[in-house]
Length: 144
Image 1 (cartoon, rainbow, N blue to C red):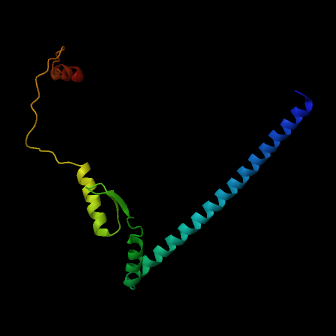
Image 2: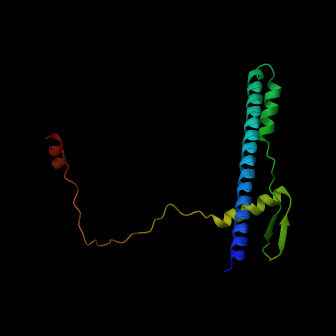
Image 3: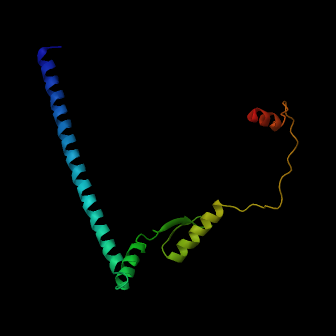
């Protein structure tokens, strides 16, 4: 390999190393900024919650407004594709139809078993016999 090729490959490798270092610097900067923003938003949330807690006796409406905002379901169940008994593929868009589709699916997956009748197990032969432990021996060893 000629010296020119060696130096050019070294130059390329050096350039890649510099770009990796720059990328790492940018990544570290991003992480610091992300953590700072996360810290500030958490502090703001804590402050808001403390203010609501302090004033909840005097202003219960504000408290219940906050509770309602936090407990509201924001993501509804999307449309469901299912196959009818005749083999047609249909989309369930209304809530009652979605409930029926989910009920049919889970009832087909899970089954109930009869708990009153148990199968009879046959006697199995064991090649080894074990004896119950002798606790009297252990007690004498422990007390000595």
